[in-house]
Image (tube, rainbow, N blue to C red):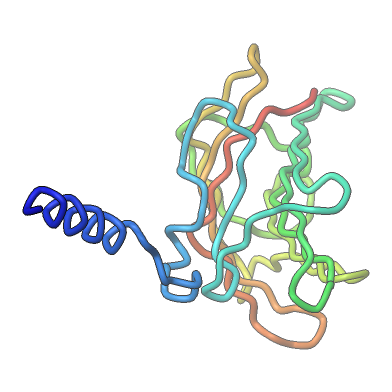
Length: 179
């Protein structure tokens, strides 16, 4: 009889400690982001105003290109998702005629030749970093042209079409790109 009590007691403890009553609200948002890898995992994520932004759903939630056009390099990585009100949100990082180098940190400025910039898209309106009040950084942590993989970390601020400051923090991506 004692063995049965010990067995049920052990199972009860195992059940108690393995149950998770957390509805997801108390998990630190940064723990929801993909790990910062450098192996072409096709991941993208960041904190958008303190909440986890992880692309998903819809058509083409992730995209990455690093193309040579007329002798100039153009890079774009973007993640798309629908918010709780079904608005399409997109966060992207791009270059305009600028070659990237592994290990380099770049200022996100304006959408002008030779610059890098960040963008936030909400439904039909896209806003860009302006190089003054709304700026940030992109660090390229891995770039492999042969295997077509690129990884990096980023952050930036942007003002949306409603005049609200949107804070993009703890961003990371690890993508295969098309040339």
